[in-house]
Length: 225
Image (cartoon, rainbow, N blue to C red; front, side, top):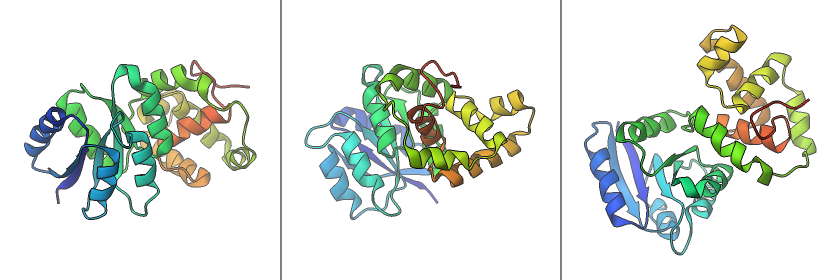
């Protein structure tokens, strides 16, 4: 079954370029398009979509707020935020709003296609190096106070799970974590799954955000304490 993709961008030429790339894939189809966030919300009421490619700067309703409203819906599609280098703050807000990841608008086609497939299969698409760059830049903007319920949830983690969480928060991939802790990649994936369940988080992107918000990791990628 094809991955049903929606393109949301106020630039028609950009949507056309993405549509041409996706149309060439046997496992993808563009089933809807919208020129702004409000139109996207309206279209999604009548169209089944698996993955939304969402621009951030659009008239009427921006991509961040549109993403938040989409992700509040039951059984909502996955959202990938599209951004440029000078709009990282919008991408971060998008991740907080529920997006499964973000990519630059000039991403190579192969990476865009891989991201869509990854998100559709339930993974996050923010590369570890990109996660580090984004959060190192915007960690100072995060709340400095810890939230008691979150701390209590973190205390439920085993020592090994906490260790894995800190490495995820520092932007390491499962393979890198496996090498660091001398574990199999499958074991690391199991630990990450348990962390997500215990903390009631959607994916590893939210693990990173939570670790920064609660002060477990500070700007620069290091663990505190």
